[in-house]
Image (cartoon, rainbow, N blue to C red):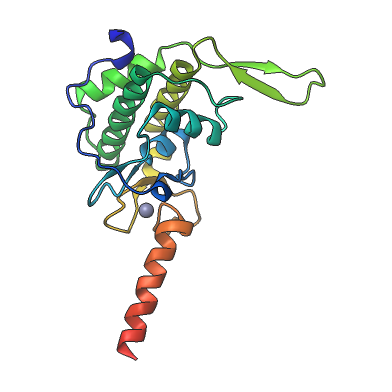
Length: 205
Ligand SMILES: [Zn+2]
């Protein structure tokens, strides 16, 4: 299934296993494409993989509420998601630095952006919408790639920041006013930084 894995010469191979609690997903980085990028933890230090199995990607899709039910995921789809994720992360870094994305990353993102998207369907009472597709994971990847294209091609991309906890290095969109947000998530990195600062203060007292 060449069309799914697309062209990337560098599959993610540097990621080790961590205890189960590290597989908690975060959705505080501001955009679906950045939520996906954040499924790698501690990119600035010893990076670790939160999408270790197809079941993890299925759970992520459910928690991200991109589709109705957690879909079935194949190994090839998991690998495709990782390839797209790394392309999005690198392209976001390039966008932040004002440089062009690597051609292979741009190709990967554009390939997925061109795939059939999720189909929205209005419910009986006309008040809610369900999203599904014959190939749900491929449609989710299409949605994520389109989200990345729209972000990078808009002034919103000027709000891309890197988490101030050096080991984390997650990308997030700072939509706060006056754009002084420092951490990808207050619940994780923000709290860790506060605890460190508190300990430092106690040590001085
Ligand atoms: Zn962080």
